[in-house]
Amino acid sequence: MHRRCNGAASALRAVFKNQNPLYAFNMATEIELKAHVKDTEAIKRLLYEKAAFLWEFIKEDSYWYRETGPGIPGPRFRLRREKLVLPDGSEKSSCLLTYKTKTLRDGIEINNEREFEIAAKEGSAETVFEEFLGRVGLKPDYSKKKKGWAFNYKGINAELCEVEGLGWFMELEILIEGAGSGEKLYAESRSRLLELLNNLGIEKKAIESRFYSEMLKGR
Figure 1: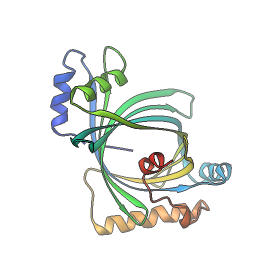
Figure 2: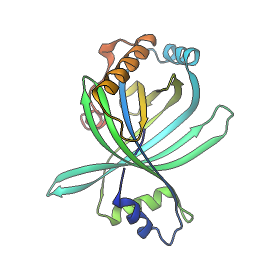
Figure 3: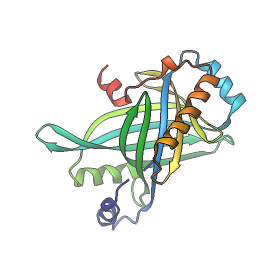
Figure 4: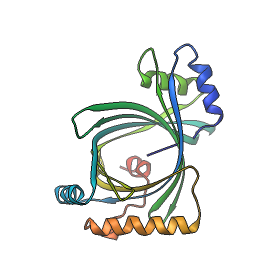
């Protein structure tokens, strides 16, 4: 879900100076978990009862990396093509470039995220992004596609989604704008996430501790 890239802001301006892009920069800390779901329809009904429905979505991600040595991949960037269908039927499409620093504790992910949203005046945003990534020496890696429904429950983002090739998951996330950290913050967030998971009837043992990248590459 969000955001980084310090020197990249000036690099983007240089690369796209003739294309007049409109871009936004965001940074946040995510504390999240994902769990396998068996009865999708039952979970969906509970979400509609307990939470505020936000939108349906389709997210298509491609991951890019720069080698730090021969055959050694460095940090990955995510290029996301996202389409949202809002409750009134209107649609919103966007393209996002994201970088995350990830840690994992007992199945709970803690991600420092930096993200750009860019819309190019000429051509598609995806094409502009891919041109930029190629120009700075990044290479394409794996891809991921997911679709589903997004809700919000007392400040927790909840997405019931199908990840192509992997099945259905319940993703729960607390988003902290800026660089939030600290043991107390983590403990409180973890407790809230697990409480909602339990309220949805999903057992703690259903939590998936692997990253999607590990699961997709291990198929």
